[in-house]
Length: 333
Ligand code: KG4
Ligand code: ZN
Image (cartoon, rainbow, N blue to C red):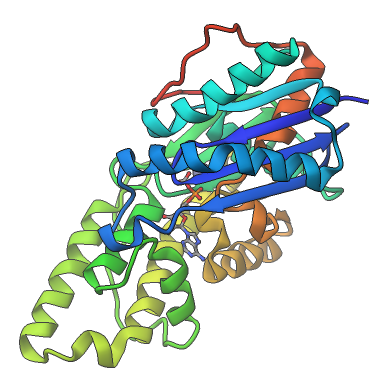
């Protein structure tokens, strides 16, 4: 049996997980609420909180899995991409643990791990499949040919989809992270109340910066006429913004799947927790007769279970990192 301890600390979640032969035994996520007041993640604060959370998170993951630290066979960790100070905490912990126990280190690309979260559990997609990975920092359409053979066929040219959610919520005066709040209010609103523009970008790429500016001007102009505009129409605004972001994503995903002839379609990353997007991708797949793979909510936003499953497959390949490995803020596939 191979037991993997996994560490994730790329942004503002400190997470530790344990898996045995590819089965997740525990997945502990310590959220950082300190950033709420700042409208976004403050990197220096994030790394300090990671330092406080990492040891208790690992202890909890091991005890939750009923695994003794001496029985761990390898430590998988997120090497990048992410915030350098945050990554450094997880990478240093993983290196120290592996050195102390004389076990191998397995480095994982965070964006590949979001995709590989689909290999947790029994309902797994077949290669090749297409994955729309949408998070706070990335928006990618990924052609997944094998566990570690992935090609980005489309990506954002500016802001990520999650950033568009978070910046909209900031314009609306909501705290960070805004995505879950937009989701909550959107459920009560009319998605066709307001029409926001769809950018005309060639190929499978995306752009969200023009949409963000359009929302900013729309709110500014309406608040000038009625200071209570946001308060009175919050649900409709959120529903309309969510619908526009989801249609931008799904139109490109559908186009890519048709052109590439792919029939297994997956969703991944923090924004895949969004109710409207989850419904939309299911409808798109139903319409075209494609197989749809939507992760459980706990595996959408950042978590170490996805690092553990990716680590397990890399461990099987015998691909290990050196002890002098350093984090990478940018880490292409
Ligand atoms: O993957 P993730 O946890 O972290 C990164 O790797 O960036 O994604 C975080 C993003 C944030 O922008 C957050 O607002 C968004 O995912 N998000 C959501 C929802 N839950 C999280 N966006 C829309 N609806 C949600 N329910
Ligand atoms: Zn992520």
